[in-house]
Image (tube, rainbow, N blue to C red; front, side):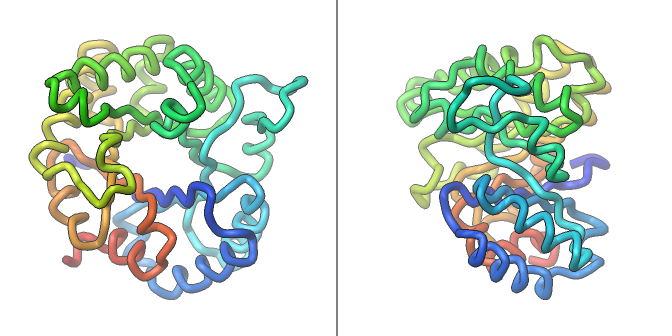
Length: 258
């Protein structure tokens, strides 16, 4: 992990209304300590309808958890019914925006061009993108994972400066492991994350490759977090289902104690 501070991000997906969000965070704040936040960065990514509530709670209670979003549009405004502009998120003190999650790609048809536009827009609005990449089970079995993942990374960072890439977060999430209970072995996850870092080095230089944080996502739980995060190229976790349970999520944040 070099000297990169791990980032543990909880992606709540389409779960928890704003009352449930407050209750979840109220439990989480008692489970995590100042010592935890000194060594691990933490973000939570609630549904859009919860963001204001989450922001208000975290700021009023002085909880050092960053507010994140799960998606955004790339335009500043316009006739895009149902969409959320990145500038709107920035005004709510959102720090991180997940871009190109596999569910956005697979279920909603977002291609590499759309994802790249969103990455650029997130940066332009003063936030940090968490750019996701990952392959299907068929691609894994066909040994096409490297090409798929590095292709997604190429498209997502091509128009960025080395400094921007150094400051962003990349997330490897094998589609076959999301919500299935199946997890890539630590060795498999490390191999793909090392490919991602090598791709960044090839495109944007050694300094960017050394600085960029790479998360692993895909059925991350307290029981496997320590092994995954002990790998040299894995700098955090993008947590789905386990992030809805404050006790489980806290144990993931505290992986170093396992």
